[in-house]
Length: 387
Image (cartoon, rainbow, N blue to C red; front, side, top):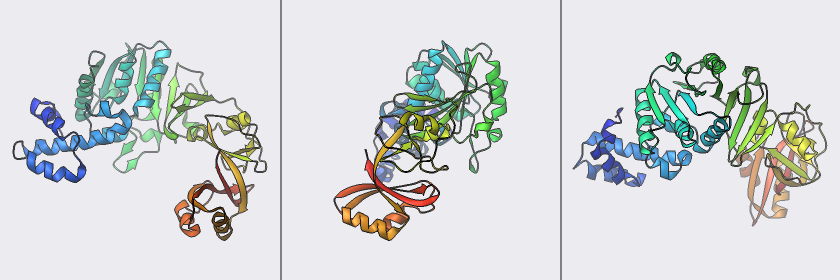
């Protein structure tokens, strides 16, 4: 079913309530029972929507997801609510009271903006996404702040709005799109639109090359719970050319200070693993400076130091052993330490963690973390534990 209208009817809504907590293992039996009283197509649509809501709970929270309407692409491509809320607050802090949300999808960003008290024009050319966005605004009691419009975003007049937010499609028939000019609409169009607005934010893939970032933009990489979620190009809300890494929850933000690459030094007592947003933003030097540390290798984003320093921007491990890459020696060491709970991390190594785990066969009550990496160019194993 490519139309949400039947699910928005009284019968459809009642059916959605009935199948809300359906166990996937019981879905066939539930469908068979419900088809005795409801059209088969409506039952299938309700069960499909229930599955989407269960998946969407990770991004939107169970309470909101249980009331919202989703499409498969909408669940996959929507911004996580925590990230959308952070972005909405940045707009709010700069006095933005109205935003044109272009390529709004099912309305996840529009919801966050409206909850920040911002009036939103939400635009998308996909009729199903527009229907979902409109239904979601109503379901969450935000339809007074969100106007949803089906249109080609390149033809919409946004001059009356304080800011523009653009989230171009970055997936095609063959999966993710890595070339910013292959986005829909292309990044160049989004940048031109941003430059014409008082303020703007463009959501882009976190793997965007730094040389593709316009000089007029502040580039921000955002992670949530340690997972890098997106990059945002801000116009009119920060210093042009600035680079920032932001970690959620928090938020904790780290700004570039233009530091040179850290020096390479011997492995100290502590190893720091910078957050992915820090690495993507090329801010490892700022973290190393904060920690009074250096790199273990010029090409590896691990920072080492002799002292323990608290920082939200990196995970800290205490290193107990440093070995040249040798599986037999590692296996003997782990057996001696009675390590049965083994975490394997890799950076700069071709060996897969699961492959190493099978070879060393950890056994025992103790735990350890093994880093397969390079130290000053040499394949190395560092053994330690979270500090």
